Amino acid sequence: MGKLKQTARLFFMKYFYRLGTGLIFGLTLGILNEGALLQVSTAQPQVIAANKPAPAPTVTPKATSPSGSAEDLILFLRAFRDFSQGNALQTTSKLSLDAKTEGATLQSVVYIKAIAQKPKQFRVDISFKSEDSSKARTYQVISDGKTVWVYRPDTQQYLVQTYEQFDKSDDSFLIGSATSLYLNSPNDFQKTVTDEALAAIAADPKMVASFYKETGTTFKGYQKDEANQNYAIYTWDDTQGASSQMNLLISPQTSTIQQFVITGKEKGMTLNLREVIVERVPNPKLAPNTFKFTPSATAKRVKSLSLSPFGE
Image (cartoon, rainbow, N blue to C red):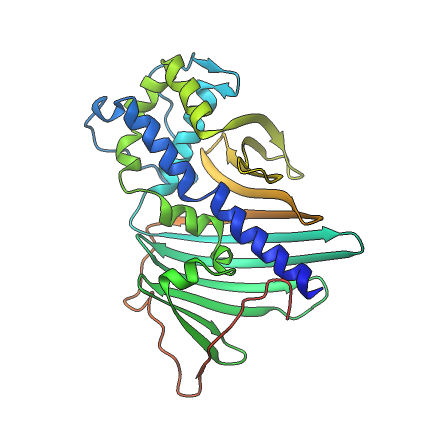
């Protein structure tokens, strides 16, 4: 069972980075800049309140691609633009992890409350609840941009790492896809993806086709969940030979990113990760010590402290 847990953690960490975070932003910006859309308008980006419908482009989308239409692309770009806005972002998420192999199943539910500020600062409260445990384990993960502290309140133990050490660790994906996506979003994304730029894309079939091709994005269509909520679903397949896929679910009503889903197979296991964004608050009020950790007199510094999503 220990080997199964380790393999599952490595999968989620590896494909979390390979299929998500800065990859999509980087490719998107490259294509937009390639199309000289920075010159379309010098107007300031329009700040759109969270969970409010965004205004439609001034040009009716008419370009199409085998992978999706211009209208689908505009929804995607607007959702990413709005997600990246603000000086800081607070999110509350529910992360479900599932790993199955012949004769064994691992399941874990992770509740994440995070505050993030670019470029590398975050404060994340993580609570685990496994299927075989009625008691949740809680952790705090705090970064000031250079140092990361991992603290477990019930044992009063804490670990100190550099930002780079934590970023490369098996546990880094547990700060949440929403947090990582925001931190990896370039500052000029919102300035580039103006409403004028979106309108220009909508009228350019070559730009639409280039985006879907170069980013490997496939628009799968619309799907409703159990609560009758409608989602637009965008998909990326792993291009490095592994059987894995990332799906991004966006609300067409509010142009907001709602869910991240990663599925795949690794060493005979079937693995699934689903993060649902329960709440998103742009520009939250930050206390002066938000991104600092001060251990109590009774806290003990340790050399290792694993977050262990599948139990100890």
